[in-house]
Image 1 (spheres, helix red, strand yellow):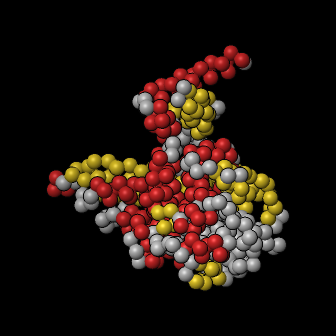
Image 2 (cartoon, helix red, strand yellow; image 1 turned 60 degrees about the horizontal axis):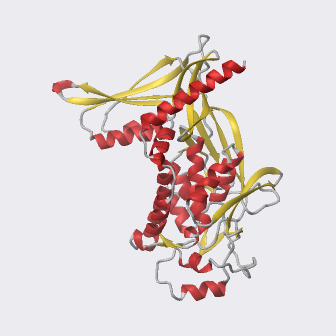
Length: 449
């Protein structure tokens, strides 16, 4: 199982997330294509930078050839705010700028008015839906903005549709969230995990005064997540970063047992002397505590319970929650229970080290009074990916191998579904084209050898 782990020892922001994704191997073109799809005149620029001795990737959003995150002059901001009656979002400063007034405010670009007035959730949702983006990318990006809107709505006690995002509605913040969503889905991790989050300390200047870190919207978004404050007096988590984290809905805790293949470091704007202001992303394959047996099999934990008094909607929610938390597999099987009642057998497979997590999930989310737990042995093919070119675009092929021999090959369904929607054809047509391209590639490789 492919997993991704975010180490938020220096917090998280949108641009840090983008940098970590690229540094961990996501092609810049994936994020660039998502940015271009928004049609807001923005592009991305990357550079390698040093953060307290750590080499990492810094991502800049350019709008009209200039940095899109330049602060607005106070006099210009007051001029536009005098005509604005929409509820303000809490956060007016882009992540990475110190929340004081000792930095240069002399630059005012042509987009100052739009940045000050902001965009409503309805406007941002329509912008993302109109862009030629894959469905999962759109849903993740919209989910992040909806979570942010819900927090702002709660803080201001106004309907969510009346909220106008100011700095979060600016081009660079929209690009951060949409491009990060594209990178998340390209990474194709089966489960996301996250460390406890360092929120920093000190104060932050918001639209309605000075607040302790984290800012109100950020604090609300991080509700229920493990947070702490250490090392520096600065804001380390921004609303954009918190919204992306909530949209991911990772499992929080220490890094799970995994064989790490790629490590990426995404840079924040500030560069403290003794504190690396970076987000670390580790990507690899899950590794259970139990070592493989001599025959190549592994031990897994199986949790089961039969239910006859729960709605299908809740069952579907539990299955999705288990998969999001890192379950190896989840099955729902129709069964006939006592007194002739039709029911459902819920079966969850997980690594032995994570059994307790899924016990609590099932007991908390379902109506069961008990769970059957056992350990089974399973044999798995080695899984790798190859990309083939088809008339409908590039499609990933999942390959199952045993001792180096490929036994199974199947196109990734989400890639096929996205390509089918883009080209207005059937999913099976794209699948057939992908298999044909894969077979042709195998033949070409055999001929070459």
